Image 1 (tube, one colour):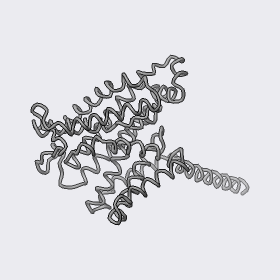
Image 2: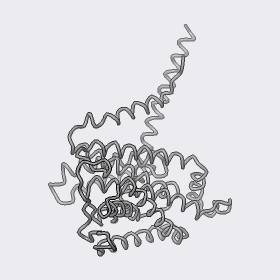
Image 3: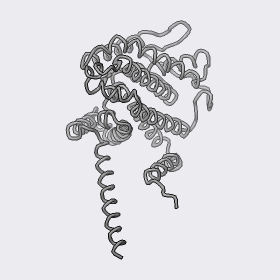
Image 4: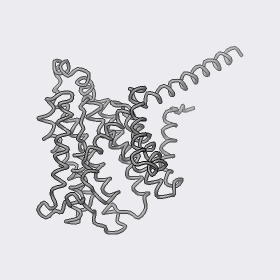
Length: 341
């Protein structure tokens, strides 16, 4: 008799449930909320590659979401280039920018690197806000960029239903989880963990610190840019401060730290749980007092950081270990009874 791994059964069951979500959630608003939760989980996981694994506190990842989104949508609006191709061009541009930013700044440590990323990010926001046209391309300036509508079209990634967007972001999330798992268990992952713990010791062991950081930054930038493209095709409007500003960047950081920085599933859990809590608070309390939902959300984030510094994933780990221990003890007792019989 073939013995089936319980973990495989749990994973298969979870995948089935995720695939059936659009059939169970039929209202567009609720499905949109779920899509946004998965998008934030994806962005947090993308940031985690450089911020969690490599320990580089980037507070300017909005640069990459904006790069992917703007380049892809400008090519689509001006030349009609399908976003399926534009996203690779936007992703490649984000990789180039990550090298241009990372090569001179990865020599900085601690708060200095974080401040450098903030300064560059804010400079990009100002540049976008003050630029209306760039050659043949319309950027939109401070008014934002409206995505050209062509109707229901798979080539343009424009759909009348939210269901295709749900499956798109679900696939993207599974992809970034797979990439994160591969990195963490690869030679690059071991290098990143080593330099995160002690950069000088890692360099003394022969690890090329700057090269390892640049590799993590390039992968993170490309994946983050893809998230920006998805945001653009979903919302169909790019507002500079929303797509490139500090709120976009810091949200990725908060979700990762609260979920569990440096882990594979921590950012996913943090992204889904905190985004869902934020939306529930905004829905029920947002209209009562201006900014109340943001204040409550901030308190929740603060409490988690103080009382659960390893992230929400540590709670899940303890629960799983407890159930595993109970199952093991139960199996041991059953074995004793069977042998006695």
